[in-house]
Image (tube, rainbow, N blue to C red):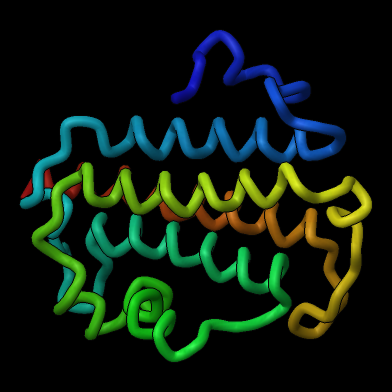
Length: 175
């Protein structure tokens, strides 16, 4: 999916137009490193809970997909989750006790497919948008934000949780 010889080149991507090239370049690199962080991972390791109120790697991967899905709704459709979407995505978004009870028993392919399916939708929509869309400003919390910033935040959040994944894997190996 990711070509190593192009992964470190921020800029023009095949089939991508305008300023989306930079954004997609960075999103691709972050995703590649996330997938590398879960290479050869077992279901037991995906479900490992170091502390009773902590996160499992499976929870974090579900969270990454859920965050991206939520930002699709926020930036592409200007809406929040509906009730049906809440049932599917809130456990991963909330990372709470309900998530600890329900997000488990899946292999790495399950999470990779979840991440890939959401990302494919993101990129398909990006291809239909203009550069001007990236710079549109909307209310976001206590300030205004551009769509570009919101999508930067998606992969910034993934980087943060990838660090947690690496730490959890070390804790698992030393448990």
